[in-house]
Image (spheres, rainbow, N blue to C red):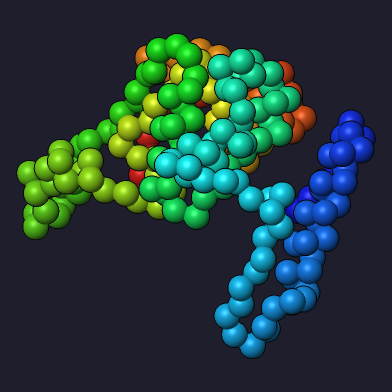
Length: 205
């Protein structure tokens, strides 16, 4: 994890960043912890999110605040992100965040057909049903269904064209949803404000 301090941060924000930085460094240095086994790390109260009946909703609220009022502010979106270790958790968070945005939700489905090598007579296309293909969750491949709304933030997970800023980690906001493409506006890197079309891609492995 890397912390960056911008010139536009307020004094209060700088103090919070300094506190978080010091706390992370202390953990890395093994202070107040047993370096030879498992340890319990005390998280400062001001860093805790008090949970109610829905912990994920509480976490989203603490991170994004009132999305319907703030989602048009690109700086607001760039300054916020939620990281999760498991794809199932990511999917759950994405669904809840997307539901907070106004407008129509559009779903894009992946292909559900196979390419069989004509020379391989031991494998038939009928061996792989649509249900089976839709149940597969392959690393580095998108899920069966991707849902978007105009105005929702997205992060690129593949290098597509680094010359125009389309590389892993590029943050964008959806500006238009077409049948075979998605129009996005780049929020980070060197091409901030540029609008691009993200076409449907055929991926194979």
